[in-house]
Image 1 (tube, rainbow, N blue to C red):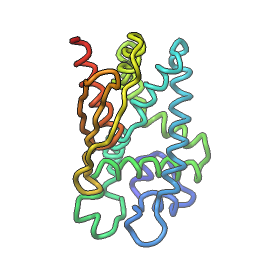
Image 2: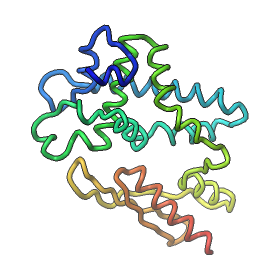
Image 3: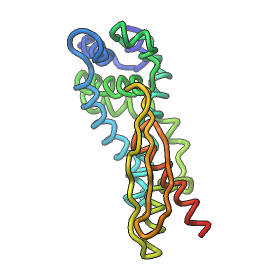
Image 4: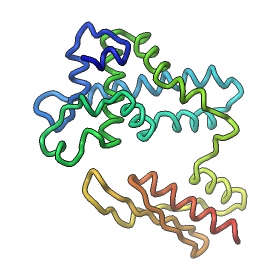
Length: 220
């Protein structure tokens, strides 16, 4: 398979790569177990690389850097660079809705490929692949540009003012399962201040709501 040459890894067991590219909508065995394995390996390798690249960074900063790298959008971008959408095997229903090019599908397949390389060639092979694929992203990292997420900044702002922590509540989930939009209400128990956020996941919607709440209380 051309993908194996693109990855720079010659599979002793090519069936592992085929499995990594098999979506759960296809018949038979699929890639979710490899995805689970690859996610763990990817998280560890990136954490290890960050630890040694930024010896002065504290835990919070390292966590934010890792989150900026190991997230769906980034993994999907890397998956597109490898043209994984050309190789992913899916059921007919998923194919009709553009499944192979969906960010979540590409990100999952990317993690599964990492897991497949690990099982086939061991940890050093998987690490070498991660280092090569993430090289450009690591070059662009800058500690000065890493900012705490809105939820963390809102919590710290309220704690500094000795106010209760904010609450979050999902008010609505709209859209089909693969295109869901979450609406979340952020509220402060010691006042009538509220904000509403939206996003493709509960976490994203909470961050949006927290960002809007921050802007509101900053004007108080």
